[in-house]
Length: 424
Ligand SMILES: Cc1cc2nc3c(=O)[nH]c(=O)nc-3n(C[C@H](O)[C@H](O)[C@H](O)COP(=O)(O)OP(=O)(O)OC[C@H]3O[C@@H](n4cnc5c(N)ncnc54)[C@H](O)[C@@H]3O)c2cc1C
Picture (cartoon, rainbow, N blue to C red):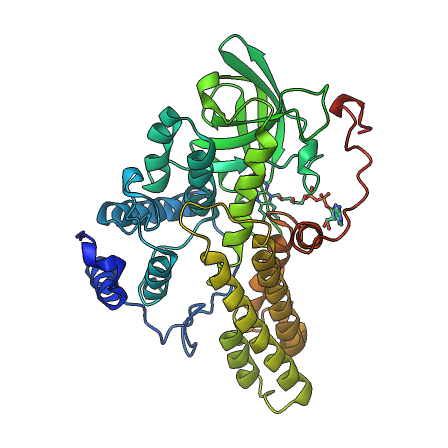
């Protein structure tokens, strides 16, 4: 494998930059065979993969994560790994238009598969540390998180705190220069492959729920930390329960001020919601649904034609929404509008499921051996996951209603009540 450097002229010469990216990719990866049915290509032979989540053994998934990290390391070394980050963090100080070029060009090459925990580390945790970390924390964590050498999982949700994330109950109690963490996190994507967890904890129960929280980086191989994978309905076990039992960590791993964890969490979530809308490569897309309609001989069916037209229009809307999300200036924190991108994406995934179910009927539920049919089952079973992850569709609608459109807020009976007195 070889690396290359980005010339200074790239900031203005986008065509030259595209050629440079193409040459870098060509010297490090195989060209994608567009005859093969990948999510972006036109299917006519080979296996169809429209899965949304991985269905792998621990060892297979671990190897996949390792390949993705190696690729990230190579990109980072060549300057493409953190394009819009400033040079001081190993970035190239370029724009989101440059990022889009890399993303487009990668679509033509055999890029190692994505994994949730890699995206969480580079796209959610690293920018959160940039926004709230001390100089020492930025120095210690940002590069390793951007260059793929260390991974960090998001330890926000708990069995009793998902949509109502501000209700987290995992306690962090100060003991001199250390904090003692106890509680349970859940749905922590990729925690079994990560070295770190970004954990939202309760540090003060005597104040209302949003006020008494603090964010920490927790080393996941630490005594008192236990990570247990959860089996998913789509196969695989990428998510985990993480049990913290009097895990002691130094104060130097606190991210942001004591009592301001909610502000830190909202920032991480805004990165998550705005990036979710751009996950265009997992699951089925309009082109693949059209291919299926042709295969099933249903392109003359007026109802199917109407559904295909609707799906196509929605895919275009989603695409433009994703571009709008990408237009957040480098280093900026996306606002509540990121929820629009997340919502349009998950609605699109659900609509693909609906049209494909109409096309396939019972062959969606049992493998008849006919090519490209039962494979859609993986899309159907995976799509609901993203309607929940990162805040459910209902919660995105609440955010859009209240914080984008300025509509009246939901009744919040526990707003000014100390967390210790909120009925649980
Ligand atoms: C694929 C996947 C990956 C995930 N990865 C992570 C991760 O890496 N780290 C992490 O911390 N968490 C992760 N999560 C957890 C995710 O953030 C939560 O599942 C989500 O916030 C919903 O919380 P809950 O499951 O507790 O559901 P609940 O909050 O119990 O919600 C149940 C239902 O009630 C609805 N509801 C709740 N409150 C309201 C309201 N105010 N108005 C209208 N409807 C409402 C919800 O929309 C939902 O339909 C992941 C989840 C999934 C599915």
